[in-house]
Image 1 (cartoon, rainbow, N blue to C red):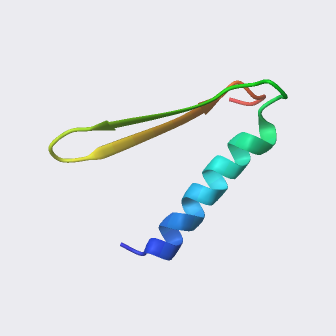
Image 2: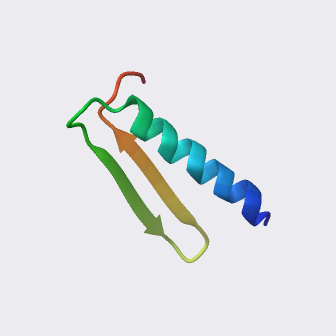
Length: 49
């Protein structure tokens, strides 16, 4: 796993959420896991699908 590349992914993902959420909006980060995998969900109430 390339730590630098993964750090860029997080920076882009969270940076876009902050950039596009309206003032007073919400960004929600949810973490989950199973024995085989981790999951991360980033959601905001900004424009877009």
